[in-house]
Length: 323
Ligand SMILES: Cc1cc2nc3c(=O)[nH]c(=O)nc-3n(C[C@H](O)[C@H](O)[C@H](O)COP(=O)(O)OP(=O)(O)OC[C@H]3O[C@@H](n4cnc5c(N)ncnc54)[C@H](O)[C@@H]3O)c2cc1C
Image (cartoon, rainbow, N blue to C red; front, side):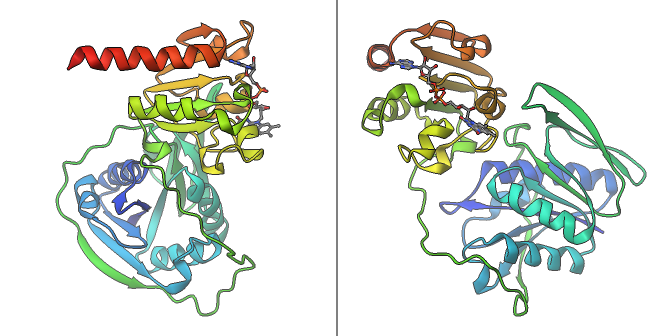
């Protein structure tokens, strides 16, 4: 028996959301009195995986895994799960987790909870897992009692603890010779942003109120000054004003930063679903009746083209006074 955790690397480092998943797997393994196996693809510094609670780290080797095609990834993870008799498989509820966790569940005919926000309550063969429902307006307790259980956890739902010991690093050769994918990768565009959106403590996000991509300079400047990641609403990504990996919400990335700036975003329920777990929300909108103000901790009614430059200047002044 084992608990398997799928881990991702970004710019040579383990993603924070993956460390949260390893911590989560370790808490389950402690209750089940079993081991945690982390699986990674690619190269990087894996030392934090042991500290987060993994006992073994399997580095999956196969050419076909280089493009993170969900069909190959599903088969590869399933081969490790079978070899290691993994009864619980944990993912982060990010793009990969959303794509691969349901496929694994279907393959093993396993119960799945997607987007868990609390540790499972384990009672014999049954796990009860809390998740958000209705775009984050309510929570529901799901019970799964299949022999294998698949859980993906909502990023930033748990603090990361790195107090474990070193893990054993092993190669795992998966056999994908008989697996074919209908997906043809035409181009790979790498995210060049310094900060991973899901991992960021502060996020500066903007919407259609900014009128066009040429106006994002002030958003990027504010983000740089605050050490923040940039994000956007869905129409902004759909119109190619910003890259799709910045789109937050129900159909985009779900984030829970400490501080979220929403500039020229109306606050539609589908947008809120991905950001309303943020600890502090600051809304800048020219319409005093914009729905986002109902979810705001701080609201500024005003034209973003006047307010944001003033905010940038205020941050500059604040920093200058600190030196
Ligand atoms: C199934 C489904 C899934 C969806 N998933 C998502 C999702 O994941 N994420 C997402 O974001 N959306 C999603 N949407 C779309 C969502 O419903 C909204 O249409 C979208 O969030 C609106 O984007 P917006 O707020 O940028 O634009 P708008 O609704 O056009 O709002 C622009 C805002 O900017 C303000 N504004 C205008 N000018 C200024 C100015 N000069 N200064 C300050 N403020 C200004 C306006 O008052 C307005 O509030 C989804 C929709 C559906 C149907």
